[in-house]
Image 1 (cartoon, rainbow, N blue to C red):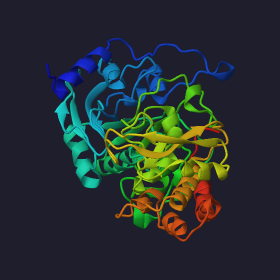
Image 2 (cartoon, rainbow, N blue to C red; image 1 turned 90 degrees about the horizontal axis):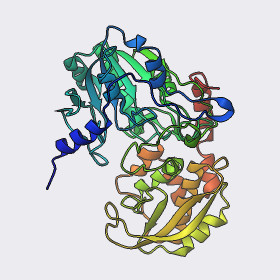
Image 3 (cartoon, rainbow, N blue to C red; image 1 turned 30 degrees about the vertical axis):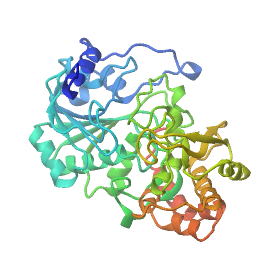
Image 4 (cartoon, one colour; image 1 turned 135 degrees about the vertical axis):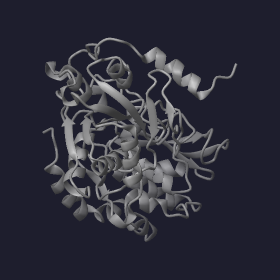
Amino acid sequence: MTLSRRTLLATSAAVAATTGTARAAEAAPAHGGRRLRTGFERLADDGYRPLDGQRVGVVTNPTGVTRDVRHIVDVMHADDRVQLTAVFGPEHGFRGTAQAGGSEGYYEDPATGLPVYDTYLESGQALADIFTASGVDTVVFDIQDVGARFYTYIWTLFDCMEAARLAGKRFVVLDRPNPVTGRAALGPVLHEEFATFVGRQPIAQAHGMTVAELARLFDGEFLTGPVELETVRMSGWRRSEFHDSSGLPWVPPSPNMPTPGTALVYAGTCMFEGTNLSEGRGTTRPFELLGAEGLDGRWAAAANELELPGVRFREAYFTPTFSKFRGKTVGGVQIHVHDREAFDPVRTGIGLLVTARRVWDGFAWRPDHWIDKLTGSTQVRTAIDAGADTDGVVAGWQDELAAFRRVRRQYLLYR
């Protein structure tokens, strides 16, 4: 029997939906007796007071869950204290049925009957018109980010904030942890002439911020005018903590982000999307496996000679089931992070690009210079092409990174 996408959505949503209050199941306290509470948990504990008297629409995806893995839309819909009237789906969709570069389109959610509007690749007045047509007064954002500039959900946040401003809507951001910590910003800063949906504004490649902090930064620095913004911050989170300290379930934010370990390396290895090498899509270890036809153990040996902090590289062979080199056995490396405190994903990604180019004469950038859009300028590509080593490439962005860190500091919510 073949089930339609809508039938699958209805079945999965019905299993997740419950009635009652939005109080999530208790979990074991975090370090020192602390228990992290997300923005949604604190909103629910407060009886949804910031949403009183408002028609509410939620921008979310499958990561918008309570700690007992109920979706917040299902929870809020079942609570008469919230007038939930619409849902807005980003890339991959509200219920998560679409692959990279796809979305679900407009439909009525089978579980709740709510209209689901497609916001993917919508921005400016066109997105403002969607908010107006939905009839909502307040737009709520709750999506798990992974800490990298080119992960598109933070630009969904930016675009929705700008559209809410244009449409005269309130905007509420429910905070969640940065799963790879908020210790520091790392990597090159976007140049404005390279702005795309994988980077709208000049922030660092690994921004080291939560979505609520980014919302404050966007409002203060980049929107064309102020939006009526409210952030519901977490309690019990420390900037030094990785996702496994949170006590929260990991729900893949997108099909190729299956684990927190993927998020740990992603800010560096996603740069391989800008090359002719596989970034591991179509394997069980996307962004941890990298390779191409013609590569062999020389790459892992060269990368290990760099003695990059916190990481080792294993010679690896794999056969992607989709994307680059589909159905072909390719050689390359698997990344093994043994000290995540010392690990620098962006420096590691640069080291891998430098050594891949050195040991494999088939190395090439994507013809559309996608690498420039990912890194935010021509600096990384031109430095590597000129023969710069890892330190030389990394040195090229330090002044811009220092300037971004100074701006970033004033918008941080957690010390």
